[in-house]
Amino acid sequence: MRRLEGRFEELLKEYHPFIKEFRHTLYLIRKSPLTLLGVILFTLFILTAIFAPLIAPYDPYKANLKEAFQPPSWRHPFGTDEMGRDIFSRVVWGARISLRVGITVVSIALCIGTILGGIAGYFGGLIDEVIMRVTDLVLAFPSMVLALALAAALGPGLNNAMLAISVTWWPWYARLVRGQVLSLREAGFVEAARCIGASSARILFRHILPNSFGPVIVNASLDFGWTILTAAALGFLGIGAQPPKPEWGLMINTGRVYFLEKPWIATFPGLAIFLVVLASNLIGDGLGEILNPRLRRR
Image (cartoon, rainbow, N blue to C red; front, side):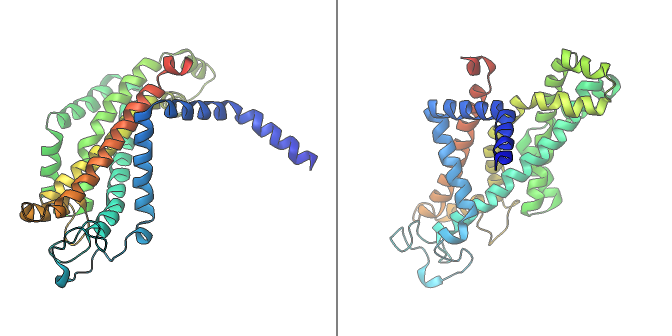
């Protein structure tokens, strides 16, 4: 028992700085009402996506033409669509699709951009020129237009839409990471790693990139909502998710035909997109302040 207690005290001392930083981060989040609001909204979004089968009262794919175009009521809080499907259930299940889109696109873009930007910034020279010119080439096109063209070329479908968005998103991370690496590659701790014989790969991936993730995390949190919005735009145009998937952009496209007489069909999916993008932006702005070293010192 004493041995376990001693081990616990050792672990507590070892991880005390991380616990202290985590508690200070929570304090800064609570101190910012808008950041806290973003965290609450985003948490509700995550929980809705995880527990969609328990929250949704109806099957989102099951049609019932006898109940088509029902207005919001106690039985159907968000009303029903042209096929008699419960819109509340479809919006809830749509959170799963949007969560998958956000995580997949941001993860792919983050990995590609971080690796290429890190290599370009650390090695410089011809490698830097090649990677940056490819980056400039992709950035020369408006991201929505390029994603639209790629999704149309690949064919309709949610997976193709996510791939198209990822291709247009990675250059922003590459440029951001390259700038961070350029500012750190001559730092004292990097020179110390070189002196003890560390390889270039170890220096880059073990020492430089972990210290460059502050701005990258902020950018990723902001991009999460925008990737969902972009995927919804592709679904609205008929290039993203295909019927009968309960994807928010696709639901808005279906509801626009009946918007003047039955506005609830498009309103509630649009409100869900608005809240997710709002939460993402609030969290991103809050993280930008929280990760500011000057603010943390205060």
